[in-house]
Length: 358
Image (cartoon, rainbow, N blue to C red; front, side, top):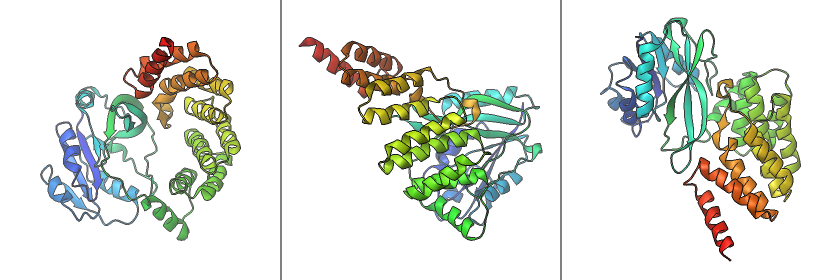
């Protein structure tokens, strides 16, 4: 059986830190907490779970703070969490089993990270992260913002999930401020940072500047394919917010330069055509979305609904708009098999039942 160190960096997390530590305390063998300047009771709460609580002066660099936390670990492997993450009961049991069975030749275990949910708690957005790392390999975090460990060595993937349960919004300007400070100080962004900087511009509604930076990133011959595909999606979103559907559509098709069509791309192409009342063309793309296969091990960001429920429900509406009620009902029922309690499915079902009663 391997031993496991939990390493965390925290700041002003008194509302969620106990919830996080309660969910993992019986799984790990050591808890390392690095506080980057809390002014609330975060450290006081953490000290109820561990004596290994350290201070680290915040210098606008997440990677350095995380590397400091890793330097304090002493067990075979390290697992990292954020304060508003939790490990649900099912995943906790599976993680304990993983500890008991993991081959010590494994260097990294990639775990799912569930970050998006519908109103019923179903996961709608999930991706893999480098979550459990062999300590003796001395893995290092890189990049001051949107920090990452570049996976290498013997890597395995597990369906065990870490669940992100945010209860408060972080400062929306924090990341863009750090990026702009880096640029002002002459820091040259690498390609991955170029992607995330473009995203921060987009999130902060600097759409024209975001478009310029996304295009620069996409046109570079190098870079992570998954980031390229997501850049095409974000670039399209920028154009749509500027009421430019033509370039929004073109931006999505640029993703075909990097891989076969993804369901996330197909659904967005369908949505643009639907808005333009081109229902047959929209059906083509929505139908293609249902035929796409999901490979989460590629390391991208995936929207689960795009592979079945969303295209089914949208095809239903398209057929209704075309006057083909039979096909509309057929696709609504397909959507219902995926999400039988969905308000959209139930509304449509009731609507069609009433329609048939006339």
